[in-house]
Every structure is written in C-alpha cells, then in structure tokens.
Amino acid sequence: MRILNCGDTGVLVEVADLDQVLALQAALAEEPPPGVSEAVPAARTVLLRLEPGADPAAVASSVRALRPSPGHRPDSGEIEIPVHYDGEDLADIAAHTGLSRNEVVSAHTAALWTVAFCGFAPGFGYLVGDDPRLHVPRRAEARTRVPAGSVALAGEFTGVYPRSSPGGWQLLGRTDARIWDLDRDPPGLLRPGTRVRFIAA
Amino acid sequence: MAAAALEVLATGPLATVQDTGRPGHAGLGVGRSGAADARSHALANRLLANPVHAATLEVTFGGLRVRARGTLTVAVTGAPCPLTVNGHGAALNSVLTLADGAELVMGTPATGLRSYLAVRGGIDVPPVLGSRSTDTLAQLGPERPAPGTLLPVGAPPERFPVTDFAPVAAIEGLELDLRVVPGPRDDWFTPEAVGTLLSAAYEVTSRSDRVGARLLGPALTRRVHQELPSEGMVAGSLQVPPDGDPVLFLADHPVTGGYPVIAVVVAADVSRAAQARPGSRLRFHR
Figure 1: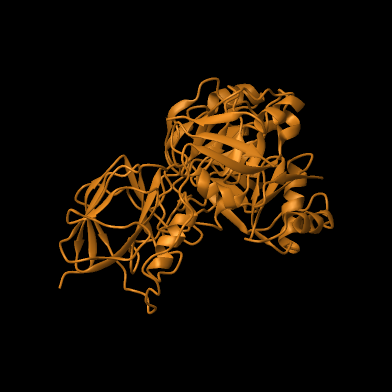
Figure 2 (figure 1 turned 90 degrees about the vertical axis):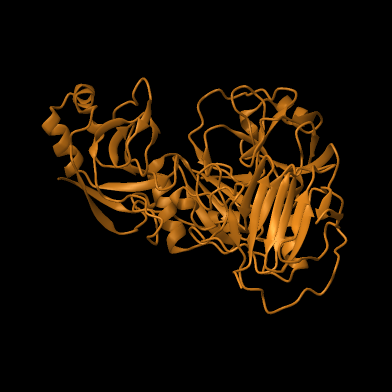
C-alpha cells in the first residue's frame, strides 16, 4: 500500500490490483478513518476526500493502521438484473472468448459480479466477476451512441450504460432495469460493493 | 402578490445556478460541482444572512440582466463588474434592495472572471441529489438560465443582514501566485518537470471552463510513459494530458481521470484560481 499526497483535501491510497482495492474498501467501510468525508474507489486506488480542516497526515496514519483482508469485498447488498442477450457484439464476444453465444450468456449469468467502482458517467459501475473467460478487449472503434440500458463487456469488467452515451465496450444485450434514477435514493442501482446476478430475460 | 422571483433578461456568456455543491455521491461517479469561487459565493450569502448553501447565480464575464418580481434584497460579489440598478450605479459587496420591477445589470468585470448574484432567501429551483448546482460536465442539476427564465426566490431566513458592506480582498489582476502540494504523481515526471512547474508562468487559455482552467506554458515532461489507470481527482489538481499542457481542475472536474496529476493547488487557493480569466498568468509555489 502506498499513500500519496493529494493536496490538503485528499489522500490517495494506491494498491497492487483490483482485489486489493475491494479489500481496502471493505476495511474502510468497517473502520472509517476520522476526517474522511467520502471515498472514491478506482482500478488501483482509493481516493479519500477529507472533511474541511482534517489533517491528511492523520488520515494517512489511520489508513496505514488498517489491515485489509485479501478476498474481502465491500457489501452493498445483492441485486438481480434481467438482460435481453441480443447485443450487437455477441458474435464478436463469442469469437474473442472461443465460446458459443449460448456459452457466453451462460458464463455471464453464472458469474457473481461485484461493483468495484463507478466512473465515466454518473451511475456507471465497473463490475468484476469470477470468470476470466469473459475478458475481452474494447471495440477497435467506439460507438458514438450506445443506448441506455446496454449491458457490455470490456477488459475484466462488465457494465450497464446508465444513460445513452458514446462508448467502446462490447455490447452483450440490454436491460429495462433503471440503472440511474434521480428520483430514487440512492439514484444509482450499481454502487461500489453491490453484488449483481444477471439473469436472461 | 406574485411569488418573488428573478426574471432573467440576458445571461452574458454563461450564467448557472450554484450552491456549495453535491458532496457525498463521488462513489456513484457524481462530482461535487458548486460555485467555482466558493469564497465569493459564501460572502454574497453572508451579506444577506442566508445560509452558505443558499443557491446564487454564478455569472461568467458579466452580461447578466435580471428584473425583480416582488421586492428583493440582493448582493453581488466576486469579479468586480460595473453594476447598475435601474440605470444607477450600485456597489459590489453590499446589500442592495430591488423594488418590484427593478432591473439589475452587470457589465463586463474589469478583473476576474466570475461574479455572484445572491438574493435573500436563495434561488429556489428544485434541488437534484441535494444540491441546486448545475454540473456542466455531468449535466446534472438545474438547466442553464436563459432569457425568459423565472428563478423563484425562497423564503427569507429568520436572521437579518447585520452589515451593509463587506470589506474583501480584491480580486486579483492578471498575475496570480497559487500554493501547491506536489503529487500524487510527481514521480511520473522528470525531476526537472516539477522544478519547471514551480518556476515558470502558465497562461490561462480561452479553452477554460467550469471543468478546469487549461494552461499554456513550458512542457512538463513525463518520465513514466505507461497508461495511468483512472483514479480519483480533487479540485485544484494539475492534471497533465499527453500534450503536456496542464489543466487546473475546478468545480465541475471529472470524478476520476486517467492522466497523472503533478501537483494539487491547496483548497484555499482554488477559489482564487477560479477568478483567473484567459490571459492570466499563474505561478505555482510550495
């Protein structure tokens, strides 16, 4: 674990990989360091934003005292997301993985996914699973418009587009689930630590 | 009597409703947003005995014209723009009364970039995720006011203004000194790059907005050339994209970014940085 300066309003904690990010998030949720207003997890880091007047050095030493347990993941509950597996890139995904289309769907629905972090757009969760066969590259060319509700794969992640936007992920299918709803609290269905099962609709 | 409101007649280049922002949702990918010059926003509210989170109008480079619906108590702070009420000169950083139908006009500020119009009771548009700030990057919050927009005014607070005028530090001219803390990714740059950042002047370009001030100056050369996995960003971050020209992140900065941050401007100086207009020269020191 490396702790990096981030001005006087943040402390950036860097770890080796995504599993350690998840374990660190779990440890931070169990023992929130005093002076931290919110955590921003990402692929290799967790940024701790500080309350006004908090001392970054004091927060850094509380973080150093944490003992994240390998394999631990933050827990924000479990949800099911029904998916119509009719995405435009299903054939390409099958080709990349060496699986048939049906095997791709079976693997995606069998895996237990966890939201590791959010980014790119409000409510866009990066979900990690437990089946390395589903790792695929991004598309060579991004689409200028991916519809809201598109369920997609890229790298080690799966994700659901909360609203229509440009995007370079490989499209598996689509869901009618409301991923982002400003009239709901919290507005995002996918928050760090949410476990997700995808089911074929 | 009709409800109290501000009727927008003209906005200038950009006017947005802003408050102290939308903290607490960064984990969902929602940034804080809020007044870019939080200090001037707070002062405008303090003059009117509003709570600090009451929404104000952030006016970029003047050009705002509004008409009072009902009698309103207002204050203008931030970038010093020529100010008139019904054609008569009025003072910044002071408590002003607008009679029903009175027209307030902001000219182009002599220095600085962003002026704040607060109204006693606050601008009472519906909040989104607990805030009335418009996040121009995430496209969250109230729509941009346009000619014809009626901005409702909330109920006045119980407390009354205790002063008519606030002495304030002048908004600076075209040279600003800003304090920075090197890191988090200063080790991704050559040792000379940090020295360059701390000695050269960086000019604010016209490609600047609420997301960030885009700067032009001596290139900051990278030592590490691999791709940086996206990581959380704070306001004040000096992020260096591949072209080498840094961006100083302001209120609507992205929650995460994929280019290394060489140094971060301290919180107290971010409000001052938000007043740096294109052509200003920034110098950074520890």
